[in-house]
Image 1 (cartoon, rainbow, N blue to C red):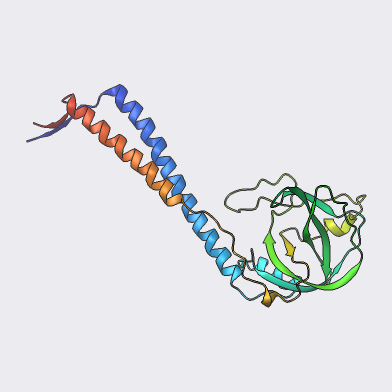
Image 2: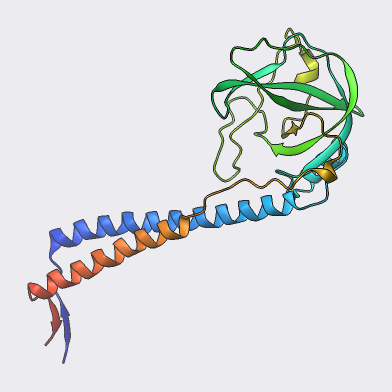
Amino acid sequence: MKFYFRPEPRLTVVVFIMLSILVGLGIWQYQRLQWKTDLIDEIQAAANSQPLTSLTDIQAALDAEEPVDFRRFQAGVEIRNFKQPLRVYTLRETDFGWRLFSPVAQDGIYAFGAFGTISDKDPVPSFRLESRLIAGYIRLARDGAPRTRSTPEKNRWFGFNPMPESHEWGNIASGADTRFYLDILEGADDASELPVKIPQIRNRHFEYMMTWFSFAFILLIYYVLMHKKQGRIGWS
């Protein structure tokens, strides 16, 4: 008994193209599954780590490529005085508003601090020069290079553009470490008392991967059955 297979040209070409697309989508979702799983593990590790206690420690952790996104921190910093803080338009619980940022300094190191939000209708407050202890969560940002594209691999969708010397913030903001910013909680000064903060990140890429591979398998079965019905495949 000998196996024979005489493929129908047009159907074979169409199925090959569709099969390539479906398998490619399945592989892409597998890669996304690996990335998302690693991202969640990194956030879990950072959030449950001991708080960092200085901007120097944060920079050292970043240089060592340790997980720091959503890690707690506390630091005694100097908050610069500016008439107009940097504002980022943001979605609040019930409306839109502005998130306020200002540079903070410690031992010659500058970074951006996020000091909560105000309503779109509220006046923008000015920041006065003061030194105090702050606490909150470290958030990673884009590297700040002009026109740097965010990528899913880095998961950095937010960054700070360099500012000209003529700007009110001048060289201070331009010299800040833009790899991260500090999500500051007003009234908090002890990071050990802050709750562990872990975002809810959906990870359904395994289901998506299996869906595309299932479609590819069904298409392959359909291809075989069509050839069997036409007597183009079988044993003789």
